[in-house]
Figure (cartoon, rainbow, N blue to C red):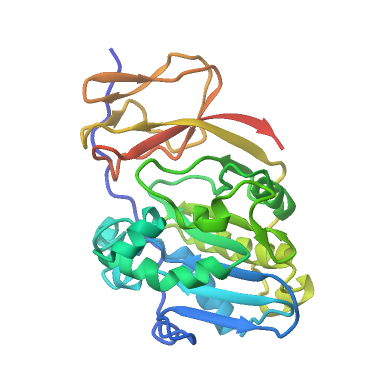
Length: 333
């Protein structure tokens, strides 16, 4: 009989919360949103952070971009601190409680949900929607419930996988269709359309979601900074020399290789009682199909094929309908 682990214990949260007091007003009339126009034709690029109020690494990165007075040399740049109300509740001793106020902001990106305006997150999505809709390229910065190597999520569009390859980091690229319980910002509007049907300045739109590591790990901040530099350079809005001059030390080494992890499906919890039978942290390759990895309200949870990769396993948000792990097949890019 498989061992079932007890509920997860609290992890040490050592990344401090950034002081955003100088930056939370924005310069657009939308709180937390900054916009800069070079006056030179080019892409409209958006970088978003704090979609979840306890995911601090992106807030640190955007604060750094603003403090460095970085401006686009071509096109336009939007920087957005998204869920400031949730961030204002942040407490390192109970950080999950500041993930959102009413509901997950990153499941509300359908116009009918946004237009309902019946929760704090839906009203905030309505305020952010014009900026997301205008953007040609989007980088949405997140972090994870558990310690893990960084993951770059591309959605299912090949154009986003091409962008991930061009950025040369991180090592693990996740190809996934999103969540059953709602639409992510990175899949909103044109970003969710198939290749060839999503026009933007200079070609189709692109959108990526970077998971930088554990929420409370200072290394997640370094990953967020590195991804910003790579994204802005690849988008063509800021040249590499200007990025290196204004943001010294932000660029990390290229990944030695890149793996494409093609998600084949999720494991969805039936209740908060879901448990794994080993302390999985993500990217484990389970050699044999049928290997039991957990218990879902009395039903064994087993892998479906050989060499199955576990993507973002976590029970910290487990409740009925919540994805607790994804299965994926991997290949070298």
